[in-house]
Length: 314
Image (cartoon, rainbow, N blue to C red; front, side, top):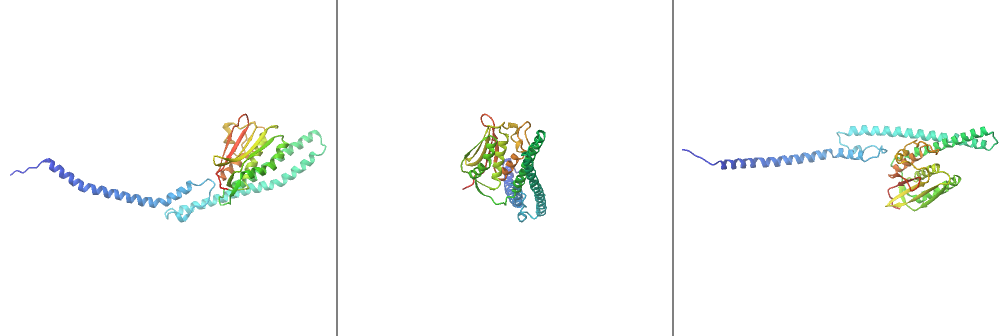
């Protein structure tokens, strides 16, 4: 007896067996992968939060991490990291206290030396002695200016603690107060100091913002020749409050726009007698307030430094 069947029937049977076994296996594998992915994502979510918190910090934020939100597996590492942050805070605080104390201790003897030199200049002195005393007086003024700027810089760096109280500050009021301090000095230097002011509120430290503007004006007056002009503006443009100081001095080359904000940097060949800290202080204060500073080249000659801040409701 001979029995036969077609190959199509066998092939169909093979596909039916494969479909009956393969489809459930694939579904089970996909479900297992989904469950494993969900479990892994849930497990590393606290670690991802720690990573996001670290990436979102500024270089000046040295607050400890929240250990309660860290996974048990990395809790010892977070604790050790917080100890390192505490040591860094203490080291930076010690450095700031040293700079502030040294600058403060220098102010009193420098002020006394300046007073004695000014009294000495009122006497009838020989020409060579007069020149030497005037040179000493100029050097003393520069040293006093440097000590004051070191104090301001230490205060600006200490404000990196974001727990410090901030409040709305009107840039118009900041610039208006600067009129009384800087107009007489500008007149003494034969410089036309003008103010074009509009109200603009920012959220910041009311003790640091005047220091920012004072350094901008002082820097402009130092490098503007006699007969020149300096213009201070405040207002709001494009929804952002701003302060700007424009002068008719020699200007700042484009290649030096970033370098002039570094500490103790001065462009070779400049005629001013600055200490190289004025714009560094401006940079520190701007960064503390989340602002942006830029240098423009106005038409003609000179430089214009514009500082924009995040807006704050009145």
